[in-house]
Length: 403
Image 1 (cartoon, helix red, strand yellow):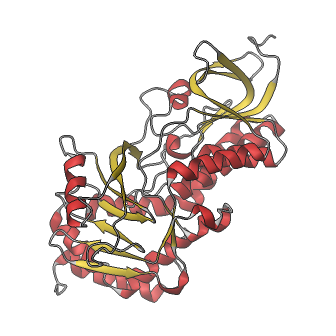
Image 2 (cartoon, helix red, strand yellow):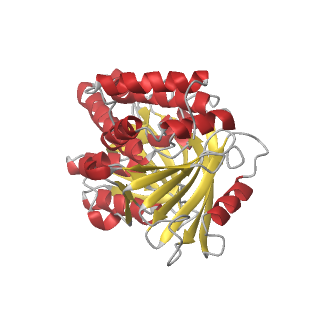
């Protein structure tokens, strides 16, 4: 059996150099495997840049990549009511700039031994011997195309994944919201009632987003201001302009503007049963309700790398399915709960108002931060969960007193 125009067979080719792909390539290369990382560069995903304590430790993110540390969040209701959620002494939320963070991850993978190619993925060919060949157009030389043959391909090329379209039915894609944000220069001497450099503001208001939320996330010298929605006709630019005005950022210099879809539900299948597996946004692993994606992207990159190597070592293509199985076992329940929260609490301003009221509860705040920072449901305090359930029910039935 012959392979087309390929003299060397790599272990794995990774398409996409964001947090998912770069993590997969790093782990593979650090373990001594033959891996190629492909990224087209020049594309920065709109992202609040928040990463929890667990991600910082688990993926050895150095402190110099953190442009800010948030020690609190302010939740803002449609009425303008605000609730401050202090993290306390259990950790902090690290903030990164994706235009610096993603290149750092790609360079770390390269230094670990991954071959790095700047180019655009164009297609897949499945070879008779079970390998797969990825065609990549070279960014520097438009007339040249790389033909990379590998035992496995990891598709980590974002929400509109070209690898997913090549390996799966084109109709298979997760549900989305479209996100838009503006990176602006952070103000000096701002009114702390409107903007604080160590606080993330989260805005639940149908005028800002009828089905998601708006945000103001400081990144040291810069700040991310944005929103998202799946509702056609809702102007994300106008909503972001309103957020900037409300936060005292209207006159701040705009550094860049970015928009992209955010998938909010893991796909039912991440692998093609042969030699392709998806990671990160391509697999739909952005958390519903919160829109958090960096930690989950890096985790799925690691899981897909492990699954690909198991498939190569055992000759069982079914091993690729372990990436999704392991992820859903650990995080599927969290994604389900967050999805239900978004479906119910984001449905109207009346419900958003009650949701913000609930966020004032100390038990809600403690369990929220412990769950977010450690990426696990907090099970060790059943009494707190019971108290929250009773208060939630009172809010739903309109029995709770509001202030």
